[in-house]
Length: 227
Image (cartoon, helix red, strand yellow):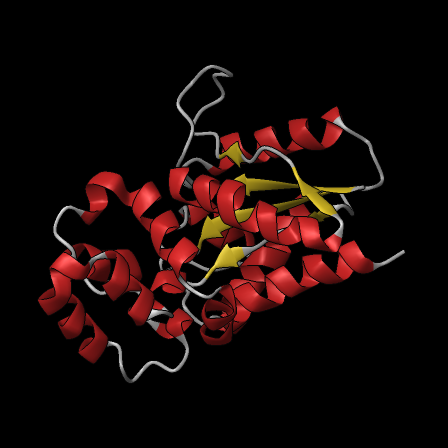
């Protein structure tokens, strides 16, 4: 069976990989291995989780690539484009945060260019994984039914965004900040809350409003079905 390792920004992404994407991709002949949380230092026993230290992540990925030469193994990332390290932006020649699809794709290509690993495909979620949750407001309201007023305001605020990945990059208006404002205590259980919503949501609905995420998932589905 083909195997896929997903290098995750944090516990939210880790839980989504383990409980949603793994169950989905097995239908396409892919075994999703245990996800790897992003390194934050060169200490092998140090804290993991957070797209904050590019040097440590680069070293960590190189170690992972070297540890298993299986030609049926692939590697990818699930990292947020929002607030990515300056060193990562500089790989593609940027000096300020990027928000457009074209610029984010340029950063992905620059990340891939750091490594000589054909099995690796970089992916940055525009702007955050939480865009997937905002793609299905009905699911959000079912899960957080006690927070209906805040979610109704959130639904109104984002109604103009046909593409949930367009929901913007500001410090108080990025997807996670909007969710935290609408649902009191959301941040306290961020990883499990995200999972509950995606488990309740229709993954196809999320994909329909998050085209970059859809393209990334389609890439792996297609690879899994190839002879």
